[in-house]
Length: 404
Ligand code: ATP
Image (tube, rainbow, N blue to C red):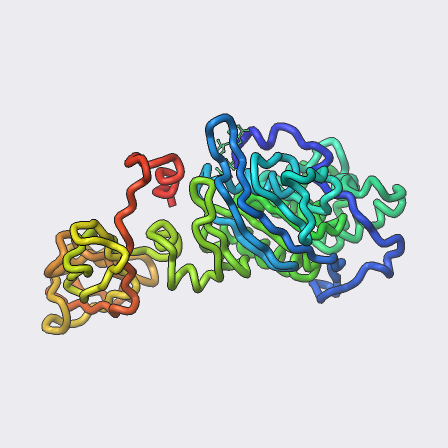
């Protein structure tokens, strides 16, 4: 998320919605630590239809379409500047569209017919930096989005939400006493307290250290499942998207590149960019001859490419098997790198101009200089056209992609 989004916090970022008047109206939808239950919400379908967002001549969103089912958790993955935060802001209504439509439960909330104000959308938003108000107590931070309720009810709801995240004891304190993980939980309680039908989360775990991040990811996911809020979570990290998302939507340059279950994106990536997100791959350029790529690991028919076109043969590091010499393609180990549970081998391989990189279990690595044989399962090999941006120049999102 870019810094300018953190400079002010409009009240509309926190939804106000119907809240049951009595605590017994709060529906438990699943167990949580200490018998605490999350209040259930009524999930909504969230639909983007060819959404455009332009800033002058710059297209931050280009014809973005995606349909998110009620109670589904979708992770939005993409390099810096690809438009993820813009999409969330458009869904929340704090950014207007330049074209296309956003619908919640098939009702247009942004588009040619109408624009529904953010506070009327029943959408919750949670940010990377948690954006807690330092001058309010933790209880009042959580009660902030419940202003439509009588004070007494808002406080009771806020305490219930804090209870859900295990932080009721801090209610009277101010946010500065909290650790990063606790601030994340309070921000989550604040976003969920009004029971939004749709939760939008912008890199909610990025400020946390790795171990805490994994724990909070699990807890947050459990809470989201209990509340049954439809959820769109922005992340830079493919591993996080795999862990959290029922589906993953990959964006680049303001466009949806591919959406699907993690395993689908892993097995059948739409392009080289998606393939790179989900596997470490060897990328080897080849030229199409006679409608196929003729490579040392097999011949691959490429019906969409013409003779003379450049293509990239992708071999996942994990799908290369190392054998004693005399089996498979002849190779020689150029380099061995210890990586804990496994070792990375760089192997000069017959028929390939560049060495292939592969992984073996620690303790099974041949020494540097050893002659070996290599085999590759042709089923695991992917072939893509060599990527060339339309104008022949890499755009900002391509550059950012290289930072993964
Ligand atoms: P990051 O992962 O770094 O947060 P992102 O994918 O969320 O990036 P956005 O913040 O949505 O990307 O920005 C997408 C593009 O739109 C960027 O190039 C950004 O500079 C541009 N942009 C966003 N808001 C504005 C604005 N108000 N005026 C001009 N350009 C903007």
